[in-house]
Length: 362
Image (cartoon, rainbow, N blue to C red; front, side):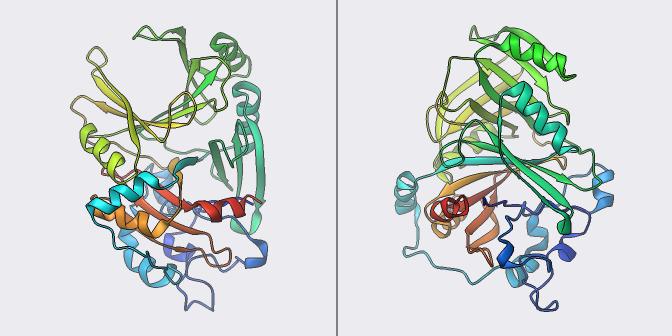
């Protein structure tokens, strides 16, 4: 069973969802309903929001506004890195760390409807689905191959919540398909929305199109031959592109695969990742001229990245100016080690111990 790294429950404030360790003997990191024998996958940490926040369309507050709760009540006994990192050895260690993007997490209003759309229109496979009635949510993992080697999407449905505010910061997801026009026709047939009809990209590249899923999340379709990883990218908007590039290169160890300015569109993009973009999922950062900040909404949550050592990763994040919103440590009951951080724009990433992640998939 795979790790879910965020608390999908949104009907209660953060403190009531994650009670302190003194609350009737419940773990400070999980709801009282949790039992280790169930081995439930957990956590969209930091995305729990109140019902009033949800329907007012406001984004959740950053997790560090609850810093005392995290530090004192939610963290299991922390391990220690065997090396105190400085700029020189941190850079060297990050280069050797076996990192890859694991999955992206976001909320949807009708899980079965979205699964059907992704399978029938986008060609994804349902990898896993589960319902947790005592916690008030269901979720599903979909993708184009096994999670041990391929990128996946994690969809979460919270009981009684059928709509989310996507905000202005999230851009789109990208997938490669062999026939863009065919996929667009399928989307039309199934009642989906076509944002941009098929046509050659403005830079003279392959045929592309833009469609929306039932919740309004946009998918860019790129016409390309067969590939082991059809999931191309997650696009997020940032307020200072050079600052973001520098952060993801140093703190995350990503490569700048390409950067291009589009004066006609008044934007500049940078493609960041852990491998060539025709073989692995990548992160596309977009800067729109003159826009320094964005509304993140409450639908999109985070990306998960694998690492060999969450403790060293946390040290490196801090060293390079990132904010750690969840200190590294094992989740009670299942002992999977994770840590969470935010980039300069507040976009969240959770790092998951590689060995523990593989065990969770067994």
